[in-house]
Amino acid sequence: MKELSVAEFGRRLAHLLVSLFILLCVTFVIGRVLPTDPVGAVVGELADPAAYAAMRTRLGLDLPIYQQFFLYLNGLAHGDFGTAVLTGNPVSSDLAQAFPATFELATLAVIISTFVGVPLGLVAALFRDSPIDKIVRVVALVGHSIPVFWFGIVGLVIFYAGLNWVGGPGRVDVFYEGLVTPQTGLLLVDSLLQGETEIFWNALGHIILPAFILAYAAIAYITRMTRSFTLEQLSQDYVIAARAKGVSPTGTVLRHVLPNIAVQLITILAISYGGLLEGAVVTEIVFSWPGIGQYMTNALMIGDMNAIVAATIIVGFIFMFLNFLADVAYALLDPRMREATR
Image 1 (cartoon, helix red, strand yellow):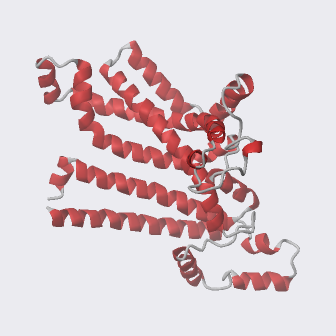
Image 2: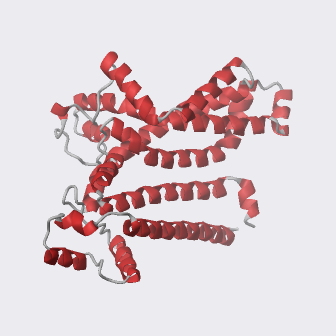
Image 3: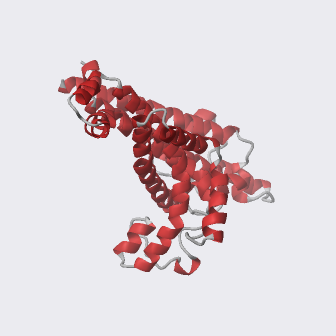
């Protein structure tokens, strides 16, 4: 069993590596075929031909395409994503500063979506075809139908400008910026570690609205999938037996159904988390959130291919890695999957 499990793990890891290689190939091609001039972005449009040619040689763009690809892979292997035109800093340094903000926002969003979406899905399945079920399905449909940027703008107008219940754009008010020394990069965590409770509450007021806006689409997805998984289990023999023994419908769902769909939920939550990291782009633009999404947008505006490609690789790798972890967890925790690998 152990040998087969190791072999199965190796197979899944190989799939991850192949997917990552394909992602690297795609990003390399994108960086070469888009109508942008990486040399001109560095030296400027008015540079003399000698400086232009020197920079082209320095970037390796005068080499055959296969050599450029190997240089590209070698740079990535050493963490060298090139220099960002926008900031003049190494792209890896810029991403290290921007990623914690996206990670903090997406993590809070997935926590919210889990604690809201799973109970809603269970309730909807428990009261199938009732008014409660119909309301939940409408809420989920709205979450999939209305664009995130519209929710963000409306949320700012109502809860920030109108009611003043939350903070405005940015991670913190302007007069609090720079007062917390970055340790983890997560402002909520760093402010608590340094005893800056006032900054913590201010940062929480700023993050809560974009986190809820970002979480809404994930809530809709998690709710629908939880409802579907639960309804499938409610028709199984063990549920009928539990009900025959006098277990209440709620007790049946909590004590028997929920543990049986937990493995499937892990997969759904991992996919949702990866989707939130990707989907944070629009939310970050609306709320001026200084994360990877806003960094990518600014890079796109000026054609900074080093920054665009690097951010795409990072987000794509995280999404694939989360799916890999969910896949492995599913195989380890689900007895049916373990039997299939024998």
